[in-house]
Amino acid sequence: MSATPEKSRPSAFWPLAAIVIPAVGLFARIEIRGAENLPREGAYVLAANHNSEFDPLIVAVAVWRLGRAPRFMAKESLFTVPVLGAALKATGMVPVPRSSSSANQSMKAAQQIAEDGRGVIVYAEGTLTRDPELWPMRGKTGAVRLALAGDLPLIPLAQWGVQEIMPRYGKLKFPRRSHVVVQFGPAMDVSEYAGATTPAVLTRATDELMGRVSSMLSDIRGIPAPAERWNPSQHGQSETGRLES
Image 1 (cartoon, rainbow, N blue to C red):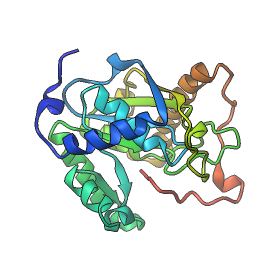
Image 2: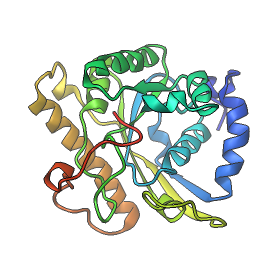
Image 3: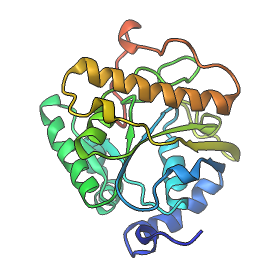
């Protein structure tokens, strides 16, 4: 596969990739499925499940291997961390503020990335899944809203195996090199939701998105996904997390 324009163009991702890719390779053997579903050029929204603090690195490496620069919507406080904050800013990551009143600012920043023909990775659940069996839980509407606002391809992504490297809220296991599957799904047709502004419609679109992610994860795991997705608010759990949409 020839290099894409985004990957062949000099950027801050080059030195980071030289460090991150070999480091991640010590922990994971990444198998990429559905590579043809990630556009080689142009903007997109990539919506991934989230079951380990380590999986952003896995997703980033997979996206980079396919020739695209991985840009996440990341929690605003991470931008104040020494070194990490500078790396986030240099690579064009999008800060997500805690206050809902500032949410439009992060959406505008993400939309600007899209207008520049770049991709945005969003954790549609808003945080690490609370599902006891690590299935995707109820999603938030950020990924759908972003795709609709910019008329962008909305691509579901399912990943599995990272929890063997670093369990949810656990410690990194080393040395351990685990098989991790990252599957990119076909872009979801959101045309029927175009112009949607009501929470009910956006929620319905998000449910469809999470259903696609769950279905792909079911294929990877070889077992059926639960009929109903985990809802933290019904189990007395907070939905605040490290990476949000």
